[in-house]
Image 1: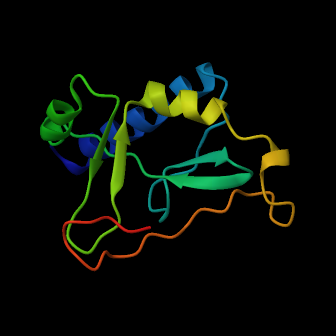
Image 2 (image 1 turned 90 degrees about the horizontal axis):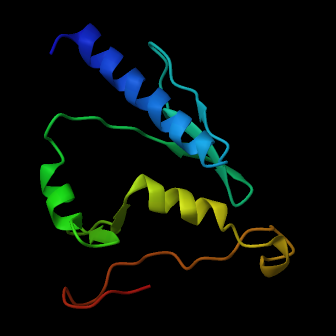
Amino acid sequence: MTGRRSRDKGARAERAIVRLLQEQGIVAEKISGMYKAGADLRVPLLAVDRAVEVKCRAAGFRQLYDWLNGRDALIVKADRREPLVVVRLSLAADFAKLERPLTQCSTKSRMPVWRKWREPASPHTLAW
């Protein structure tokens, strides 16, 4: 695929995802542009503007879709890297609509406190 066709395909995917999120009542904004470094979308979650990257491939993610088939979520982890959670956009939108009330968050930051991932001592255990 030529550069222009690839760029246009990515822009179409970004616009489609913004539209799908907005139809679910989630605020989402396309912020990427030609020759503009940074994230593709901005989605405010838990009182913070989250940077979202969109990748679109014809068959490049087939294995992820196969693993996710019949499951609600997929967790993948590379050596010495933080695990990633893969969910369908519809489920992610449901999660976004269930933001925790501010009364359950820290009064100082208004954000829930999450423990940071650390590498386990043993390769057979997960550590938080």
